[in-house]
Structures are given as C-alpha cells and as structure tokens.
Length: 310
Image (cartoon, rainbow, N blue to C red):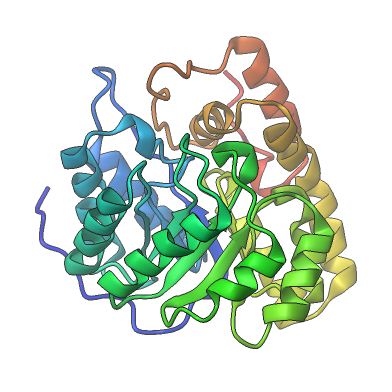
C-alpha cells in the first residue's frame, strides 16, 4: 500500500467517531489492507470521524514505526472524507509532543490526549503537560477523560481550566457518569464540544447536548451508531432513537461491562464480516462461548441480525 497522506479534514468535529481497532494478521503484524478496508467501510456506513491509536486501537502495544504506519494507512484510506483524530498518548510529555507533531505533519485533523499513564500526575502537573502539547501544535485537541484506564480523573472544574488553551476544543468524557456530561455542558458548552465516551449513556448524552460519540463498538455496528445520531440530534425523533438504542444496548452493555472491551470489539468485527484478527498479547482472542454471547447480543440490532453464525 502507498504511504501518501491526504489533507486534513477542514471542518469541525461532530457526530459518531470510530475508535478504530488495529487489524492484525496471523503473524501478529498490522494488516494494512484490512485497516484500509475497514476505514472505507466505516465511512460508507455513515461514520463522521475516525480515531486511530486509542485504547481500542492498542496503541500501547505498537512500536513507534507501527503507530506512524497506522496513521498513514488511515489517512490515505479516509482521503479527506472525514476527520482523522490521532491518539497521540505516551508516558512522557516529550513523547506526546513528538507523536502529536507527527500526526499534524501527516495530515491528521486533530489529536486525542488522555492523562499520561502510570505516573499519576497531579492537576498542576497535568496543566503543564497539556499546555506544553498545546503550544507545540496547531490542530485541535480532544481531551480524553478515562480514569478507569489512566488512574487520573479530570474533573469538570479542571477541564474548564484547560479550555483556556487555544487548541483544546473537545473532550471525550468516559467515566460513564451522566452528571459529568451535564456539568461539562453547563460549564463549558459554549467553548468545548463534549463527546460521549461511554457507550451505555450515548442516547441521553446526545439528547442533552453532546455533539458526538466516540466508541469502539462503532467498528462492528457503524450504521446503527450513525442512525442513532441522526435520529437523536438531526431529526430529534426520540421515540425512534430510543427504540434503536434499546436494540443496541445489550451489545453495548456486554462490551462496557464485560472487562474485555478491545477483545470483544475485535471479535464482533469478525462476526460482522470484517475480521480484524486477535488483539496483541497480553490480551487474548475472545473464546467460543464469549463469541456466542456476542452473536446473541448483535442479533438484536437490525444491522447485526445476520452476524456470522459459525
């Protein structure tokens, strides 16, 4: 596959963004062709944006050259049709700066930043971290608050302080606490685009004013996710949106509550006809019984009714 990149998407971010999986082949190497096929499929199904190299994309298991490769393939396949917002996280601020600059230079429309993992920086240290990255790039930043993964919770009060940074324009709120969404909207709604980052509260988040939803299950059920956004935000047909969301909810609850989000998202992709291979160790492929659970949940969604029955 060629490595030429495409220009950045020129518009604002809103809608359903797929936290992209990173397809692997039987040799545990990145499968460029399957990644490109998945990107094209997601866009054709109505997804509004792509987020490669998040936790669902196993960025922590990729070496630097692989991270760049994922971005190049994603950008070329997207071809400017939707924004590509790169996860550029790392354990040290200088690494995050380097990854973020690289993403901007390659043509990404923005970057998504969580708190650095493992070191557990305090609020004043986080302020320095995010300001350092902000000052080093010229593309929008989507903050990613997921204390369950990072061990660091960024409160609405703290996030409000961060909105003074010129590039910090979005937040993916992933605590799963609906009051966080409403408090962020109350405090920062005119300065910060709020994205739901917890699948099981997506409907209510969109109904109260979240401008989008970043999720991993989008990889497996892109059309349903896009339809829910259309029904809720664009048409404001809440009865139809609620019906669709309740059909999706068994799958979303299984993913969010099962403790194997990335493993099961990849398994669900395979069941839906887009085999993305297993995750890299230490994560393992979903078992046969787990796949049976996934099939049963997917079958309740119109899009998933014909999930692979093997």
